[in-house]
Length: 400
Ligand SMILES: Cc1cc2nc3c(=O)[nH]c(=O)nc-3n(C[C@H](O)[C@H](O)[C@H](O)COP(=O)(O)OP(=O)(O)OC[C@H]3O[C@@H](n4cnc5c(N)ncnc54)[C@H](O)[C@@H]3O)c2cc1C
Image 1 (cartoon, rainbow, N blue to C red):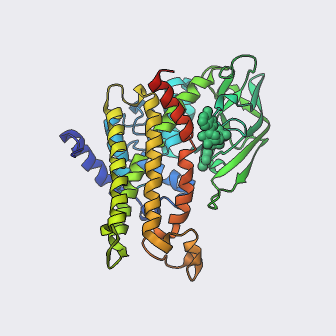
Image 2: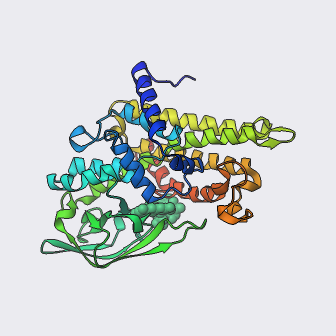
Image 3: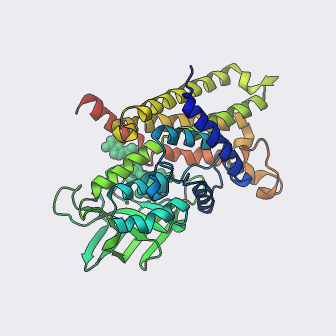
């Protein structure tokens, strides 16, 4: 099935693709080839700066007055696909796709001036302070308090699962400012300087050995009221606006397309039963199933994005994309590990003679494939678990 672009978009695609290949540093391409293993927050800063210096390409949807090229949804889509297919790191989604747009839409003029340039050029890295020990799926039950004291809020409590907190400059988080009414009322969105006195973190080790997750503690942390986005007690609506964009992006269709290309390269190179793995009937069937499923998600995403209103018009459809997109991504990564055989096993890197500094065994992707496979179990949990997305879809479709 032809899912090409019209002439104008095709010219745009060819242009941005060739620029990306030009400006992408080799070491970053290598890390993406290893299924994003080893991409660090400082890599994200560097890549954001490189894209920013091309004319605001780090924030493709932002209007020119805030430093972006103001591309249409179609162009943003094509650009992000080209990043993935050329094995470049993705955009910084917290900055470009979540908090930046929220500030542009709901922020005060002074907040835009203070934060938008640093979000666009990579000087400011963000972390997300939404989840708490007893408020994940049921986010509106959050209890971490922000009590008003003069021109400040005083924050006390705990946030959980804060990705990359030690590397972040600022947190965008939801805090309880009033407990008297419905739980969705009385929530306020604050930007918090991660160097604030009283703010500490403890790492949570993930089961594949990663260290991206943290528990964040607030002990009388003073936050200027000038760092509040929107009105006091009315942060839930803005917080959900940001979540909607996260859900949409977390389908990671572009990344899966890049993974599928690498999987096919590996399967064409790996031997199986006297031939090539890609020709093995069982493997070829599974590969075809995964590719068809990915095409379905890609087409659905494109239909929604290019439809009237673009992503802003999306409701439960973002949940639908997230469920299917993450399932397909996990399936592709599973096939990758299968294709790599023992080279794809977790800790295969450490078993090499000479340890991590030795030449990797097998193809580029092999050294970290096992870890990435386990790490990607998260994709059906974060940004709203699959079960919760299915509830959202069911309610919308059944009109409940
Ligand atoms: C790797 C990773 C990174 C993360 N990064 C961040 C971050 O940077 N910032 C942040 O704020 N949060 C982050 N999160 C938290 C994430 O958003 C939550 O884990 C998620 O919302 C689920 O909440 P929970 O873990 O509390 O699970 P729970 O809400 O306790 O759910 C437990 C189980 O019950 C199921 N369940 C819950 N409610 C229902 C229901 N109504 N119907 C059916 N099933 C249900 C869930 O699907 C799940 O299987 C991250 C999570 C992960 C795994």
